[in-house]
Image (tube, rainbow over all chains, first blue to last red; front, side, top):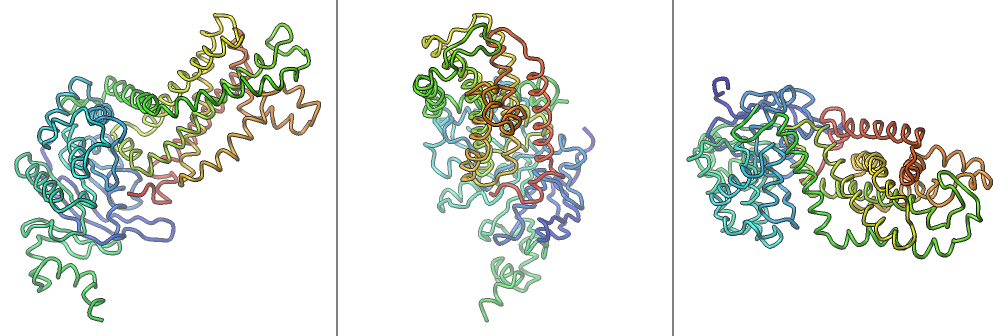
Length: 251
Length: 276
C-alpha cells in the first residue's frame, strides 16, 4: 500500500440534485485518520444524500469523494474496501441469526466462512454480544441491534466508519453505550469515524464538527472553536444561531 | 488483491456469490408460509382447474407430445413456468422491500462490481425457484404427470434460463417501482397478462382460431417461449427458437436492470434512492 493518507475521508466540492431540487451544494469536508468527526444537521439537511454519495449508492455529479485516498467514482472497489457503514434504517435480516447476518456480510467482502466466524466472534465480543451469536436478530433490543450493525460494519476491517444517526430511537443508556463504544474504537483501534447526528450532546469539545444546513456546509472546525466563533454558550446555541433556529424562536 | 483475509480476487467473487445464494435460500426456507404458498398455487391449478377443464384439448395433438394428452399433462410445464414467474416477481418484491428496509444498500456497498452483485441476486432467486419446481414436479408425478426420467435432467438448463429471464424482469421492475403496494399493480399488469397471454393454459393454435390479434401478442410474449422451452425439455426435446428468444430477453432485461441500478446513469440517482 502507498503511504497512508492523512485524511480518511476527503469530500471536495460535491453537489447533487434530484431533478431541480439541489440536495447538496458545493460540499467539502475531511475526516482525519483516527479521528471522530460529527456531521451535524437537521433532518433534510442533506446528510443521507451525502452518505449515499460516499457509499456510491449513486455517483456525485460534480466534485470528488475520496476514501483513504481512493476516488469513489474511479476506484470504487478500493474505496469501498476501506469503508464500513451503519445506515440509519435497520439493515440486518430480522429472521436470520446474528451469526448468519455476519457471515452474509463477510461473503460480500469475499471473506471465507471460517475467517468470517472468527472475525464475527471477535467483533461481537468487542461489542459485548458474544453470547447472542445464535439468536435471531428479532429477539435483540434496539441498542443490541445497533451494536451488531457496528460489529458487522467492522468485519472487513475498514479504516473509515460512517454512521448515519445511529442512536435514533434508542434510550439514553443504549445511546451512551453506543457512543462510548465507537469512541473506544477511534481511540484504541485507530478507526476514523464520521458520525451524523442532530443531537449536540453526542459531540465533545475537541471533536471535529461539520455543520450541514440546506445542502451547504455552513461551519467547520472543532466543537469548541465553533462555540467560540459564534459567541455561544454551548454547541447547541451555536448550532441554533447558525441554522437560524434561534431567530425563529425569538420571532 | 487482498485486504487482511478479505479477498477481492476470484475466490472472493465465488464466496460473494455463494453468500448471496445461501442467504436467499435461508430466507426462503425460513419463511415457511412463502414456501407453502409457492407450492399450493400451482397445485390448485393442477388439481382443481385442470380437472374442470379436462376435456378442453379435445383430443388434439400438440408438440412435443406424441399423442393427445390429458389437460393436466398439458398445463404442467406452464405451471412450472408460473412458479418461476411468481418467484421472479416475488424476489423483485423483496428487492423493493429490501430497498425500503435498507438491506439493498448493504448489498450495494460491497466492493464487488454492481453488475456482479445484481447477477448473484438473480442467480440466487433462480436457484430458489428451481428447488420449488422440483418439489412441484415430484408431487405432480403422483398425479400422473410422468415425463420421461431424462426429462427431469433435461429440464434443468431450461429452468436455469427461464428462471434468469423472469428474475431479470423482476429485477428490472424492482428498479422502477418504489412503493411496496405497487406489487398489486405488478400482479395486474405483469403476472396476469403474461400468464394468460401465453401457451401455459392453451395451445396457441386455439388462440389463433379465437382471435388472430391475441395470437400474435401471445407469440410475442417472452413467457410463451419460456413455457415452450420447459415443455420441450421436459420431454427431452430442444426448442431452438424458444431457447434463443429466452436468452435474448434475459440479456435485454439484465442489461436494462444493470443500467437502472447504475450509480451515475440509473434511476436511483435521479430519484434519491432508498430512504433511510
